[in-house]
Length: 282
Image: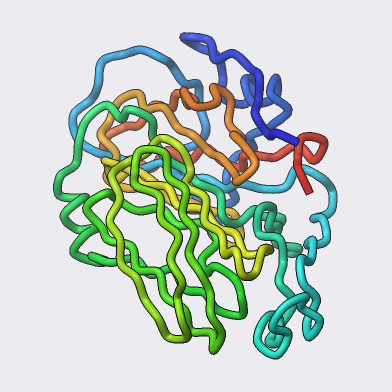
């Protein structure tokens, strides 16, 4: 099922919580342990303010109980190479990974669309911290399942498994490739920015899947185990925020994003963005 939300984002004075409610989502203020600027009204217009702020929040399951993880290959019973694949543990379906304790949803892409303003220093710091981002093939999984990078960063695909894998990458703007990786093999690539998620797969172990998103700005994040995210160094003013999973968009506005007003020197906490279980694919 596609998680796309068919709601229309109005221009001015529509509260964030009201828009998400129309879309089958809800926003709840952050907990004291994650205190920040309270959730308030958002606007699609308005003059940009000088300086920078941040946007933070949490992507969570909207039901009373977190769903049990879907298992692709059971421990010790993999359909291929069982001595290696799923030998250390069952292989879950990471397209919907919900933490049973916090109900946080992991591996969600969070980013700005056509950001208003730039932050060259943030790009420099990002590339300086990780000039190359690594995606491993371990236990016959892509680790991590979801990877976000700037186009100035390189991506290293490697395998620490003692069996052959292949990396089959199907971009839209970039050149596709399908390369065998032997045990302890590695391959480095660099991508230009794309608006779509780039799917990864291993044809030798067909349950293996992953996604990459490549940006031409530094305003992106991937949700953690508890569903939390924070995008720092965001130019003040109105920005359009997108939260999406492997199976579709979560926030209203779809690819256009949902407007959020960022104030200089402050953290804009959009609270808990709740995924309606009725709209979730399992």
